[in-house]
Picture (cartoon, rainbow, N blue to C red):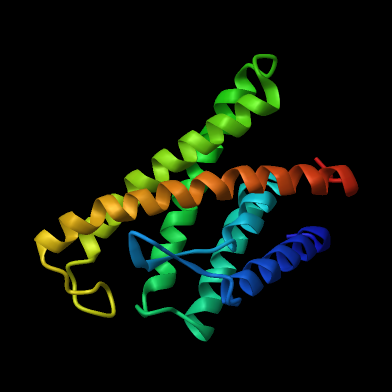
Amino acid sequence: MDTKTLAVVTTFATLTIVFNLSPLKFPAPYAPYLKYQVWEIPIVAAFLLYGVTVGVSIALINTAILFVVYPGELPTGPLYNLAAVISMLSGMLIAKMLTQRNPSKGGETLFAVSSTVLGIFLRVGIMTIVNWTFLRFQPPVGYGMPEGAILIALPLIAIFNTTLALYTIPLGHIVAKAVKLSVKIPK
């Protein structure tokens, strides 16, 4: 990683961690154990501005810091967060590859919409599998939930992942566009 990339990763990782550790958290009204936050927005913006390596690096740094400073109610919680972010970024990457094939059809708007849709789709799909698989285990891996409770929780978690990505990805696009207008971003 060159010095400029390292500076970008450091800056966006710091923003991500500050937002993650801030008291700016809102419990989901339908499942108060799930918290709406804004810490993923810098990851999405950096991913859009600088690519996969930078976005994933920031997500990994955030995960490592959370393990040390604040893993949450579940010691392996940062891994759940990482899976959610990586799956969402994967959907966005697929959208980028699809929209770059034919850049004249819809351009930036098409990419913003398709990255949101595919980001949500992959995040919800992968996190449903992750949660169904691991919530049944005792802490520190899961919550020791019985199958019936997991089946009740999965739709609520899917709603949470959908709504969180529904504001995170578009706001990430807005932040990336604002940064791009004010800073020269190398290709």
